[in-house]
Image (cartoon, rainbow, N blue to C red; front, side, top):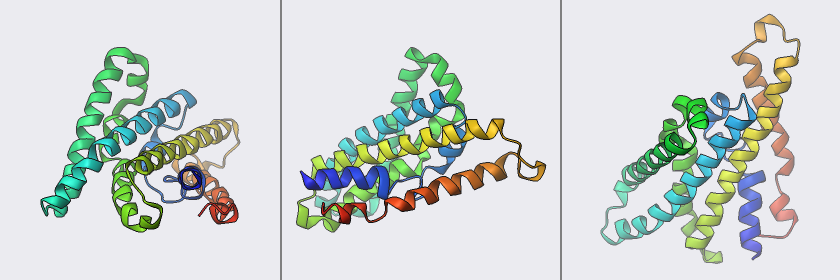
Length: 203
């Protein structure tokens, strides 16, 4: 149980995919202008992360048995692309306003390195956390934690950007420069969580 808690804490806080590993920066910067779009994108990413983990974990076992580990990345990308296409079709039919607001960033989940990163990291964790018996359940928890961490980063940054719109920003920093500066400050704030897993004696 402690290991599951450690995976959640690491994925959401200490090893946040966006603010600590700097993965998924494209949607982080592109869709975080409004809270509703940030939440919609985050929910879609969590859904794709969980489904892609559920699909790629057994596929990886099959690839290893066949000696085809070198095809891992290609197979994973194809699986993620198919899942994103499914999410896009569902959102277009049942959540049209959210689909329109997400725009080009929804299909970009296919190339979102956070999604590909979490499925590859799960495979690496089988060896890295062998002492804890890292298995399918742990991989699913790790994927959910990574998605929840992505959502936390998106929601926090959406709040920051709403404040920036009302701020008196010097002309030379308006637009992308102040957005990147704000993102770096938010990511620095997460350094305060480093060591929390060890401090809690979870691992």
